[in-house]
Amino acid sequence: MPITDATHWCNILQGRHTLHLIPHADHNYFIPATSTSPRQNSNQQVAELIATWIGPEGEGDRFATRAARIGSISRWKDIEGVSNFRDLGGWQTNHADYVKAHRIFRCADLSHITDAGKKALRSLKVKKVFDLRSVPEITKNGVGRIDGVEWIHVPVFREEDYSPEKMAIRWGYYTSGLDGFISAYTGILQHGREPFGTILRQLRDSDESVVIHCTAGKDRTGVICAIILKLLGCEDEVVAREYELTTIGLRTDHSKILAAVAHVGSKPREAYNRDGTFKEGILNMLSSKYPTFSQPKTKSSLFVSVNGQV
Image (cartoon, rainbow, N blue to C red; front, side, top):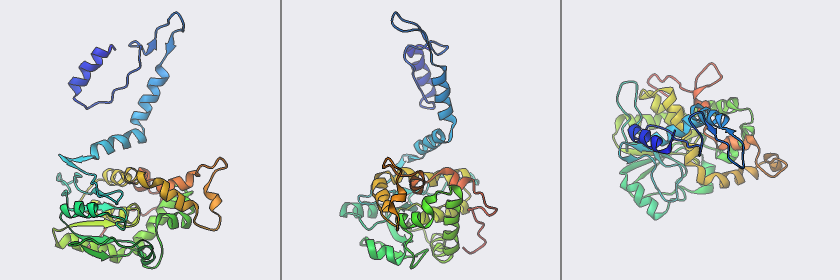
């Protein structure tokens, strides 16, 4: 259609659309012949655009766009020195209400938080920080204490380093696909009874705002946040898509984490392809893929049923 008509429809739809323009194409998606070039068929391009839009990547991108704000409030918080910091609130439940915003925040390690970051975090009225990291991780990186905010150590693995690089080595860079993720997260569930129970009882008994984090804010944090959202009545689709947002939250840390993973273990060269790029398995370690939570291949779902205890 003419660009003027496209503009007309954009105004009517008021942002509820995705617009792609193919310059010079007619209504049949053909570009007329010119004195220097023959008639061109752009239908293949149209098919690829539609396939991308309805595919998992397109759906993930649209969810991330919708998730960027909770009403007029930004979901992502700029806490200097901290990656992957976001509000867990705003999601609709199957009870037709919403998870309260500014109540639960999730993020990566706070050990490098700056003074400006501490000030921004205090402005969120956070009273408690639940740190899921092990003793070796804390010994290596520190805590990042904040005046006026209580630090509570609730390790899922007390003596076992579960940082991204160690986890990647332990699970073979997740080269087994979803099965590798499920095995890793099943281990987190099995060891998380006491720390997760402490967090859930805090949320049950107090209205204080809290932060939950591990090293990357991805795996251990992802599991407890999934449990919280399921207990509140959120659909599996929402829980899995919220988990997937960590892929965005960790983008600034990708090179650092990949470099660390590539140089851990007895055979670091196994992390690379012949051309020097990282193998798919090591890249999977960084990815918070929607299918990891939405389509478990084992009989017992990652979305466990909780009857009074965790």
